[in-house]
Length: 85
Image (cartoon, rainbow, N blue to C red; front, side, top):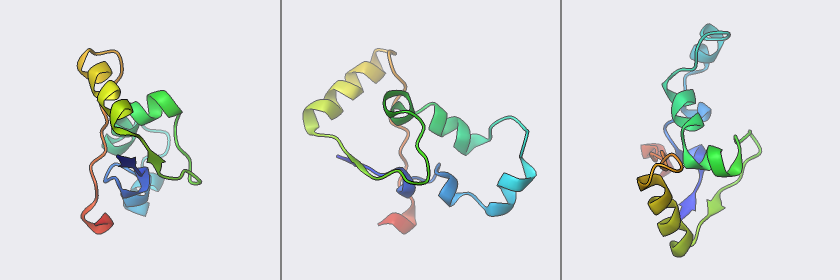
């Protein structure tokens, strides 16, 4: 499995530019909340603009799923953008 946050609809790259200026200093919006409550942020830390795609093998993906289903980590919240296909 390849996890590329830049292809996710929750990524700041997919949010309209005017929203980030309007919401400065306000509580996190849906995209920021989804990113902060994603297993990628929990296990790898918050990503920045220089983040690259992460490849996770099948065994690790299965382990992440078990951990998420057990409530030990949040689930993978990756939702691929239609533009990413």
